[in-house]
Image 1: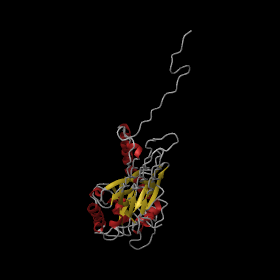
Image 2: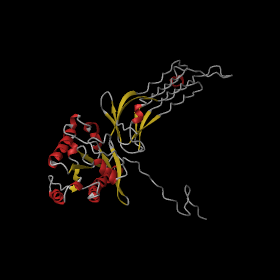
Image 3: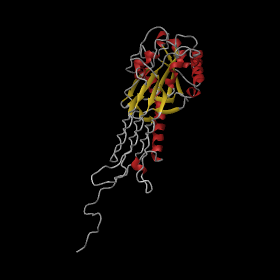
Image 4: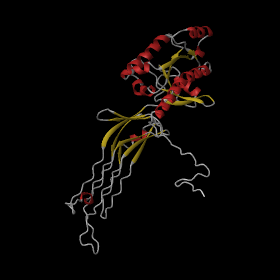
Length: 367
């Protein structure tokens, strides 16, 4: 499936139905009053997150979404039928932005999150609504209101716990294929990865996390060089970053500095994320060189020396990542509980069951 993470669509809500002018016409009722009904409400356009979608590809083929208009009112005070809403499904992690003002309208992160992007027009009133003591036979009505209409941009940012960052051909695709069931393209030339890949890593029973592999970064990626700028957005939501350094290169510290600088220039928040350093392809080095690499320090970080091909150090890296992820999960649960305590979520009040012999209403009479 082709990976698409940007799309622009046009949404238009339905127009409300118009009210009508009508008067009662019944036998033996020579002066029937006004009975014109109201128009129905127009349908709305709603965006909804769906975990089963992974790309915005569908919006390449359909760019316009228009909801149904409301029906007009009728005599006998009959209200017109309301138009049907349209629910447009998007992947989890989709950012909704007003195309004209660039204002962020919604961020649909979790499965089932919804956002009313275009509200349907209100139905107009019929002449029965205008009857008063001084005007008992009004001959006026209201037309239905138009529905909202706008252009929106959809931007997909993958939801992952761990983001793999490295220069081209640093072994990111090989690593994600070893620790998960993902099967990205792997070859011995740079820029093999052309689209982000997601994989689920199983640590232990009931313990797992999602890892994302993005195309390799080069110096100047924040300015659009290579594929970096196109896919850097997909590590914005990650909790932990893993900087992968190719052991066959002689300038590991310089490579790490390039990666960190590109992330900082793209978004300063990325530079503040938790991170680990992993030196890859140690199977290509002799034992003495590997020992020196293990003792090497990159700032305050001691690197993990791994070989995805030989399986060396993979288990230790996975457990270290899980150790970094757990505090973030605990904070997320605490925040969710705080929202519930503050009353943002509806409280369920349960009525205790009645005791045996108890009566409601009148008191039990004594004889």
